[in-house]
Image (cartoon, rainbow, N blue to C red; front, side):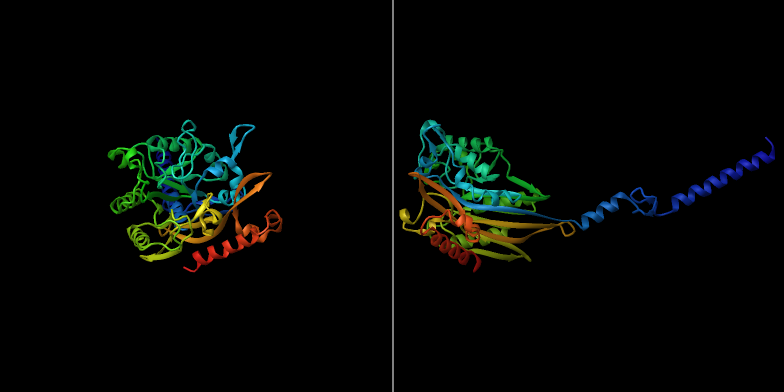
Length: 402
């Protein structure tokens, strides 16, 4: 090979190495912006872009909780169609449906069982309701039902298990009672916010004998401080952003929470609970916002009756007609790895009972909707407007003053 050719090849190699080095030493690559031919500096790597997007990421999600859903025999009979020989409870929820469907996750207390048609339907004191009740609840928009309450064993072990199957059949989930010991705690994710849902009850109306001692350890969640603490620790270890507890406690028809409720509620916040929804008293009780470790946590001691036959004419207690839906907006800040309660909205309800063509009707009334809408008001009977106005003001005074 001639010296001239060798020199040429060496020059080519040197130039190649030079340009290769310059290219790789350049910290940022110039890329086309949106295919327009215009250029801008790209980030040094995709991983850094992802980190920056996570740092600035904030998401929100909303949950809704409602109180006791009960089906006394007058309600069951009112829902029966003798022509088709079927039950239809959907009209009970027609006015609140839009509120329930407007959130990411909706939960209520199912205070009855669906033990099976073959044993006959019954109301208080040992409930057994048609499965069509669950069809209506699902149609209303509820996704999760809490079943840990004093009526969950009204029809024994079979009733408890059948109820869980019936809930699942409608595409819903339940918390607080379980078929198997291996059932994990329910963690629901809404908009990347992980919510642990826990449920407990004070007791079972003496029906514990229908399941063995071993089954009592996993089939029903009874209030036990050590268990609650352990459950909270476990779900936090699983990455729950918020711990939501549904608890069946307190004294029936008492408008103020007991000292035991208040003590347990505040302790649960210290253990790590963020939101506590109470039930069982069948009347609305106060709310509390408790700041613990710099974070606001919320308790409503009782949400009252969402649907039942309990009322002034029967119980001599008009407050059993009152209920409330609680909407809680949550916000998760990924840069702080923190989820907070952003906002709370109260939607007072009133159970309407009236006769139409000699048939009883039950409807859950979202009171504010009726107060603001004359076309809804004209559907009310004499005296009903006064009752819902009283109900609204008394409910809001109870929950807002705290």
